[in-house]
Length: 297
Image (tube, rainbow, N blue to C red):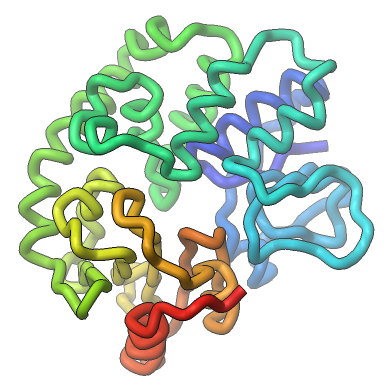
């Protein structure tokens, strides 16, 4: 039996809860949603999947993404909820040894982007928000840190966690990165009516920074499209789409829209990964849908 989840803050907290409730001792398997969708990871019969698409081989499944809903029976729990961790917490609340209520409240806020302007502009003043920004799901070399953070959240309170040398170093780096990221966003984002489009394909590596900052810099935008290369050969492109958390007038269900492009997500945010030879056509279609801003379910 092992936990299979993604290394964002929601996935980290899912792992914390499942380890506590089920006393699992095998290493966590860290994967992305594409790995499940494209069959790039072997899901074993005893695996517990959280915050990822469903696999028929798993023992239990917990999720909250709109695009991952099932129309068949399964073991576990699913709900359109602020976070997958909240779904796990509600399912195992009576089995948990520690009180995780504060952690779940903060995870719900972060994963559903229910943040204030001050939390976005000054994350250093908000411990959980800052901690969540130390995670980079696409950096496989960070796996020891993901596991370390799971251990810390299981046993320590947030002030102590922030004093951990590795956590403290990464928090300082996040603060410095965010200062530079503002200029990078301004220089690489254009407006198409009420859609802001951030194109990072001129960078060999996507510049790190606060994913919510773009909404504060382009207040007339109701949705952002972010484009970047997703492999070393610059063949695959990842397109992320997110409703503005400050100008909440986007009517498009992002998760449903991106199903058409082999992606998915929530109503308000999601991503897809496509080959570069489809980029012009797919990006144009996505932006057209967002400009039209019509409800799609």
